[in-house]
Length: 255
Image 1 (cartoon, rainbow, N blue to C red):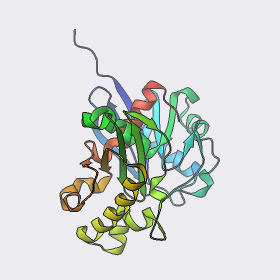
Image 2: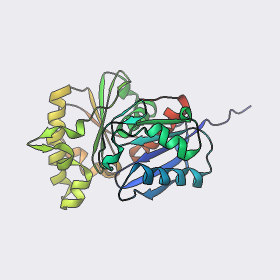
Image 3: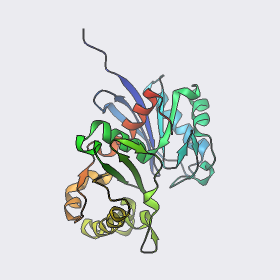
Image 4: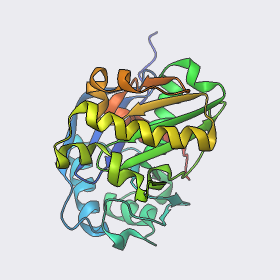
């Protein structure tokens, strides 16, 4: 008898878009197409919750839901707000989404977006990432970070906000900055190199994993990085957050 595929549902809230999809939890792959809706402006908790509910309804999913936020999330409560409305600070996101989705709080898993992406990469990506200190960086509207020691997450690191040469790191090296300033890949890679050099001297990782939408064009910039630390491109690329969120929800993982 063939065992049924374990399925979950994950939603990744970003500064520009909110994405959701059904996930094969055995393979770490999306089942069918992902649903993407623009992040509302302003991205208040209520407005974002409406979009999340719409995505879940469109998908016809009635099970547990994992949701990522670009924020420090502790016990379901958002304590920061990066690239989303500041009203999120202090919001009980667990309770908000549970109410909007018509589920119990135990059916919703909230976690930091980069932590979710990192969990997916550790589980479904290159096995080398499960040994030693691995730092995953997601380059998008901002820069997210997730740090693992022998595969175990240290939650809510915010290394995208390190001060680099007098600037918040993500204001200089996020993928959105490349687009907004019209930087070429070589120009932008110099900023990424500077950022990663500071980070590797701070935490001395054994491996960097780079992800986010810009990882789809990794051949244009990753080879230009000349670091002490090896750099791998995220296996799941920009779907990692969705996969990690779905896995967290299916296992009742909260941060």
